[in-house]
Image 1 (cartoon, rainbow, N blue to C red):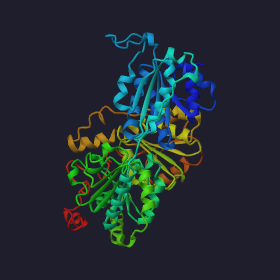
Image 2: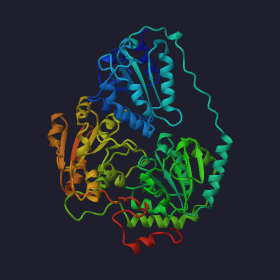
Image 3: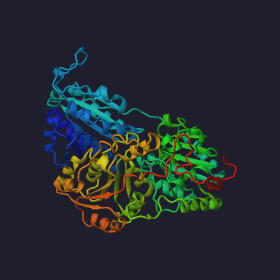
Amino acid sequence: MKLSDFIVEFLEQNKITSVFELSGGSIIHILDSLHKKKKIGIISMHHEQAAAIAAEGFARSKGSIGVAMATSGPGATNMITGIASCFFDSIPCVFITGQVNTYEFKFSKPVRQIGFQETDIVSIVRPIVKYAQLVSEPNKIRYYLEKAFYLAREGRSGPVLLDIPMNIQRSNIIPKRLKPFKKPVIRKNRYDINTKIQESIKALSLSSRPVILAGGGVNLSNARKDLKSFVEKTGIPVVTSLMGIDAFPHNNRFFCGMLGVYGNRYANLTVANSDLILALGTRLDTRQTGTNPKTFARNAKIIHVDIDKNELNNKVRADIAIETDIKVFLTALNKTLKKFDKTKLAEWQKRISDYKKNYPSFLLPKKTHINPNFFINKLSGFLPDNAIICADIGQNQIWTAQSILLKENMRFLTQGGMGAMGSALPMAVGASFAYPKKTIIAICGDGGFQLNSQELETIYHHNLPVKIIIINNSCYGMVRQFQKQYFNSVFQSTVIGYSSPDFRKLAMAYKIKALKITVNSQISKACKWLFKDAKPALLEVKIPSHIQVFPKLSVGRPIEDQDPLLPRNEFKTLIIKGNK
């Protein structure tokens, strides 16, 4: 059997339905083998970075492994951004790269290169993958494939990479003689976990101002329903991190917004005044805690649950640290917790309700020009109940996260650790192949959109129901905001030297219908137009360049004290007496 055929059969046996790629000579054998298998869709992207991010989007939305392929040299290196994003955000993806023939590979020879486009991609990506392997022996292919798929999902999930030379791909093998990979035996200390759960229940029962911080780990462990059950049982309010923003429905009365530097003010006030935080699947990084972790929730006891022991007690010291999968924890917690006195939280819930009422994510605009937070909130009312929203990096990401209203079956996909501009469009492509019947929305900025705008052709070619929204402020807005605050408004390379095309004409060049709006009165009509059918469409939302992301935390301040600063007397009334 040809080895490339074996690879494809393995993918099929592991229920891979889509492979995102850009062709090249070094993967031609695998592409030919894929072509023979009609059960696996071959999605030809127009840049390898986009192929990698599409696989990431597929995996994020589906909760299963995404697969992307590229040729050797520049094909492989172009995928690095997507690979790194999967590593930082714990997304299970398998990346397959072609490589020159083994007899053209330099190995330990002290030369830079022997084969054309020869690049040691395995050494390059090792810091940003869970596993990387050059396949130099045909009879080890089964072992490497099984190990790669196992490690992508085991423990804290993430990316793996197999680099397969051309002569290995075309080798003949005998499948029955191939050595398998044996999964290691992992012993869990169940008693210790159960003990920690009892400690957690006791701490929760003694708390009068508890709050749940739901991170991306809730989604990665498929624990959204378990979280909702726990909240319904206890009445404990929920704030989320950016990566966990779709972990809990926003129309639930216990939802209290997004925490962090760019979080909702009412969410930050909730956390600042809490006496206990149940942190689920979140790193508690500086974008959540502020630059000085010592000021974070200073009077709160912290229960931190995470699958990665290295994240526990890393930046914020936990009173109870629990190393386990979030779903395992919540399942056990729901089973163990028999009674919980909801009535004792009435005063706390009323205070949070006042925070939400008095400090909303936006005010009704007084001018005709479009306010992005207002636009996103209005857009929410037109979204299908099972929509998948993909947000790009930049101001558009934050405006969307601050003001989107997500229902129970909606998903919100965005990059956290890597934060690559241009990621929303290819991520939307991947999500669309994961769920062909769902409406996918890609929300982009004008700057970020230009980094992967070539994937409009992929959307047109496959007639994907992707709705593209470009919030156009004619600049790199987030960096411009930093320049305004810290660099005396010298807008070099964000305004000076920056330009963008006519996005409507660009979309029409790819035979995608497009519309542009500039004033508030056009929003409702434009949203109806956007969702009137299942065809791809692009909506350009023009806003002034000066609009900034607020609230925003300045360096050194505690998260509850965001810009624009509240009057000091007013601010003092918001902090519970006894809190520092």
